[in-house]
Image (cartoon, rainbow, N blue to C red; front, top):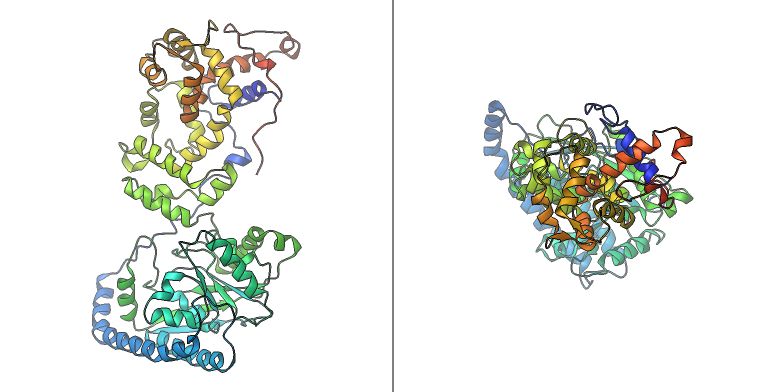
Length: 544
């Protein structure tokens, strides 16, 4: 199907195409439906509400429990340090061989006992379900949902497997020595080859036949509020070895453990938790998951299968949010937008729309410049028209409707990014920009005058008295617009590319709505643009 035929198909489904009714909306196609936001709350915030009676209870219990528990935790950490030192003495920070023999047996036994004692002294009552797999059965544990620093209890219950940790953590006095005792896989932020080296180290350990300890990974990579499971990073699934999912639950009436990007701080959570009479936690070891041949070759597929099984067991949904969404959320806050504006399910839209982090961050800046004057950080059609320096017209309503994917009359940042990438960028190919330029260049002299620009744009928008001088001056460097200036502007502002081709779409729609025998008659538009002569190209609308 030629581009002109595609344009006709799109134009025919647009609200108001041929019927003058802008209230109708185009039918939903699979690709559009796949980009609707998930029906889950923001997974990166936690707002714990504490009533007056509960505050009094916390205060009274805290007078007694808080100092006792702080002293006990400090004492246990001091007792654990000598065992950790014995285990790691004369060993480099980054191990090349596993710790074996008597040092491993004695220190592991002592540290497991002291670890359980520490969490008990904090007030944790731990319930363990399921059978813990041996290193030969499952070299890797994957624990989720990851919601707090207290999730380290899974490491104690699982028998002190190795963990993936930042290299800087191993430098912290006391804590660093204890971390090194579990033979961690250390990640360096300054080493450009760190990711590759980390994956190679994980593969080496998980395929050692039980020589190295098992590895415990929190595949979500950041803390959430346990309302859903976000995207699993593929690192733990790249080796293609069996993994044992580990579920973490905190079935307490008052949540004092959840540590998210927006909520209580580390110190506040420690104090609140220490002031509780007890805090319940459940650690469930699910059956070992063995990858098939396809999953061994595709770690993302394996990760998604395990995530879906864990979500089903927990009774919560899955989403495609990732750590990058946290970064966007923080950026949105810095731009005085609601922090939720940055939650776009970065992994999903970047994978399907081929967007990178810098591109999405740039779009956030553009979106903020439009939405800064609107309440709630969302864009209505008035703000949209003001940003484009165009009046509210039927054509602009049609364009706005293509962005407004959930039909609520406003555009959020997620809809804005998807709209630009899915609906506008296909209009920004070299071929279509050339067609649009020829559309405006009525006298075919290679330049667009303000009169030519005004005539065609007025016809496109259906506004005969439209003043386009401001928009013309924004594109032109002088008295006329060259092709390079037009192309540069269209690439930087894909919203206009859709508007520039509206007139051509309407012409094409008219041609393709005629009987078939009439369509075969050669015809040339009055502006000497003949869309039927363009080469055939396959549609970029693909079913997901």
